[in-house]
Image (tube, rainbow, N blue to C red; front, side):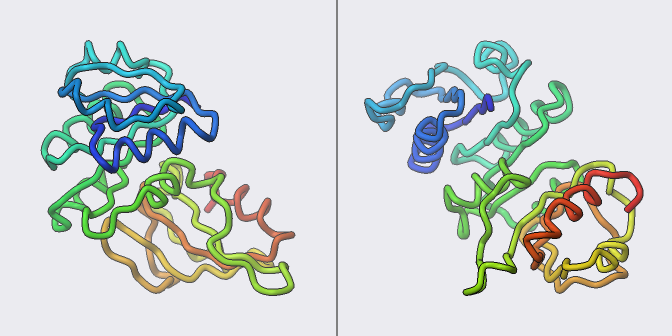
Length: 218
């Protein structure tokens, strides 16, 4: 994957190093050249000095073919502006923004921008949102048959009820995270693009779950 990280502070540099170490094409954008010193010699990606919401700088970072973008500067407005440009202008499939004001989260979630509040932010959470449908299980029971997974909700499910997920044998939805709020699963809930589904699945049913999530019939 080609991933752009906007902001090379503690979080951005850690995320960029993690992506790079896992073999992903990674570009870091920061307006302060000194910030790139946080990247170790093991970083195999590239850097762009500039602003994350400047289209010239985004294009220099390869946003035209980016698979994901994480906006993790210290400013909410900069992060959201960057995320919206990535989502709405360049149609980047996976966009995540770090925010300081959790009250804004649901608004951005409706725009298809996954958000993580700064008080709960970790690099692992960013990775899970970028790789929502490829993440390793959160938990596996001792016999290894059942696992707890996170799955991002794609745009084609938006506006549809989650009810049919309970009809899949071996699948038990548990929680829905929307912005900074998490709710117990209910068949009455309507899917929003950017929702995160937390589901316990029999390993043999993972393929059926993923097929259901990516189809338009849910």
